Image 1: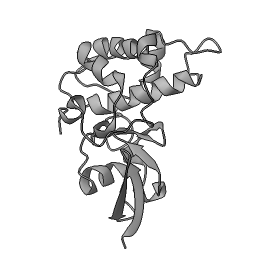
Image 2: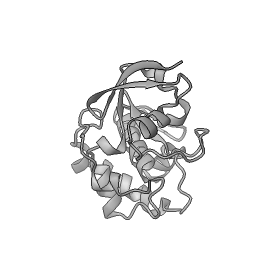
Image 3: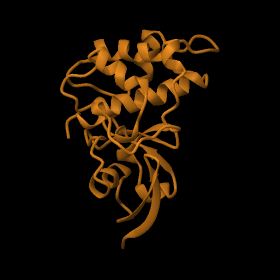
Length: 186
């Protein structure tokens, strides 16, 4: 039995009819042809499927699509954020498979930090994005190539005051794919 519902995906209302067991990741990839989010482990352990759901980063492989009726989803294809440019500038990727999830997660964690949400290593009332804080907040996103040495500086550069004035991901979805989004491995 298929279920009909709608999502707002990258700023556009999308109608879907899917089996109720379909994950958000499979709905995005197989029904909407948005292949930026990757199926890595299919258990929520690698972060390759990370998207922004109502402004918060989530592992889309763990969420049933039908439970998100009328929710707002931003995928790498709809993202327009300084983090993308910083990943390019700092060579924050190698094979590119994890890059969409890394970028979506970085955008989400920058928003969490801006809201003052602590992590397990936050030592003050106001989180500061030093390398330890970035590593902790990004620990749910794995890179098998080991590009961490460049991912952390890319995120740090995106968090710098000049990048901080950039609009949030949820407020700026774009319908067109960005070079860093579309160029990642399918």
